[in-house]
Image (cartoon, rainbow, N blue to C red; front, side, top):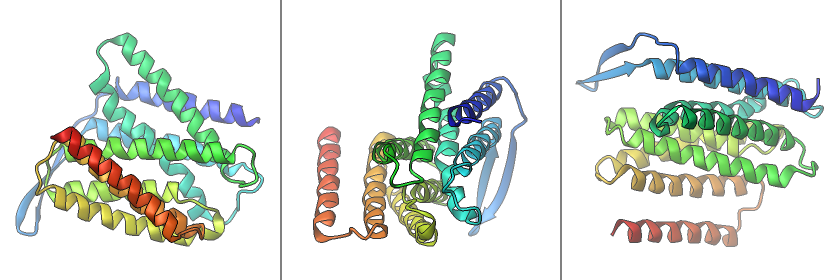
Length: 270
C-alpha cells in the first residue's frame, strides 16, 4: 500500500472517531482521594475518555505508517513510540478545544477538515524525519516543531485555567511536557535512551514551573506563554545537546529568544 493511502486511512478513521466523540455520551465518574492529608476530587468525563480513545487511534495509526519505513528499526519500540505522541496529543487537544470554538455546524465541519489536514501533514512529516538524508527532512522537522510547540501552548493554557491544585496541574503539565519533548527530541534510534532521559528532565522542569505559577495568579494565556518559553528553552538546549551542537553561541541564541518573549509578555500584560 502506498504511503499516502496509509496516511489517508489513518486520518479517515481518526476523523470518524472525532465525529463519534461528539455524538456518543458516556457517564461521568467522580473519584475522591485523600492526598497529603487533604481531599482531592478527580472527575473523569466523557470527553476525557473519548479523547484518550481517539488520540490513541491517531497515535497507533502514526506508528503503523512510520513503522513501514524501510529504515525503521524492528527491535526499538522506545523509538517507534516517539512517533505516536505528537499525533495523539494533537487529536486530544482538538477534542477539548473544538467545542470551545464551534458556534454552528459549518464551523464544526471546518474544524474537522482543518484537523484532518493537520494530522495528515504531521504523520507525513514524521515519516520524512526517519532518514536524515530525506530531501524533505528539514522542512518536515520544522513542521513538527511548529505543531509541537503549538500543541504544548494549547495544553498549558487548558491545564492552567482549571485553577486546580498543583498536584493536578503540575502532573498534567509534566506529562504533556515530557511526552512532547520525547517527540521533538527524537534524533534517531541510537539516541532513544537520551531522548527519553531528557524528556523526563523536561517533565520535572515543567512540573516545578507550574507549581510556582500556581502561587502567581496570572491570566491563563499569560501563563501559557510563560510555560511555552520555559518548554522551548529546555527542549531547545536538550536538542542541541543530543545533536552535539550545544555551544555558547547556541545558548546565547536561545536565551535571547526567551528574553524577547518575556519582554513581549510583560509589555502586553502592562
